[in-house]
Image (cartoon, rainbow, N blue to C red; front, top):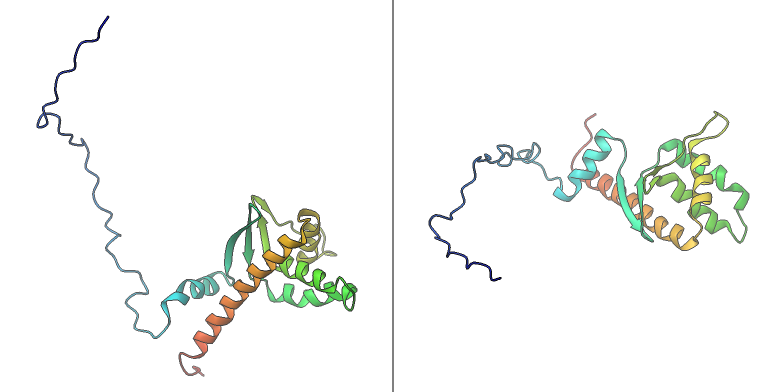
Length: 173
């Protein structure tokens, strides 16, 4: 059984017109709020500046060995706790490895969809809890080393931003 031949399409009659017209986004043409501010501040630092100003930290997501890691600049308390936490490994052959793991724990906030654990008692600190979590969760020293490099890059962004701000002008007081 043969199928009937299809009739040729009349190009003018087959023109498609949508039943609903979606207007253009009115916000698309609006300039960014800081775009009109006259400043010598380098454009590449604006996002980092906004993160530090409103969040008090920079965050960055990176992928290492097929897993997503959320890194955030550590608090001053975390930074001060890094030394005492590292003390058992000072002047040992594993001192450098321990320091990298502690440094990564200070920055690490999430692995894939698993948030960093919070301390359950005041006896444990946030960094100590995350350090234990990193030791249990990441078996490869190579992964720790790659994360350490990403943490150093985030820290370098903060330093670069502060140097940029230092060069912009005089103190206000």
